[in-house]
Length: 59
Image 1 (tube, rainbow, N blue to C red):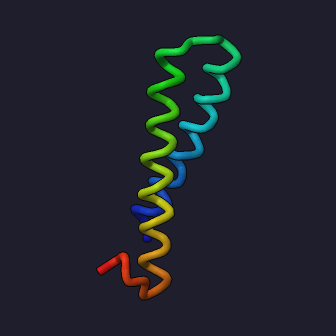
Image 2: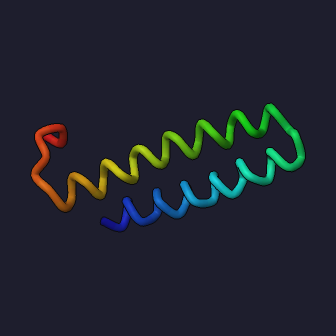
């Protein structure tokens, strides 16, 4: 569960970075921030889901 919390914090920081890069209009950094937010967000949500439920996708 600690891993899920750490991944969620990294996701939130990546979302903040996406918003900042939209303001600065830095497309290259925006792309990396968006990919980081999507990937870390997916893994944090799936880790929390698998820890709390017995979903068939977790096995």
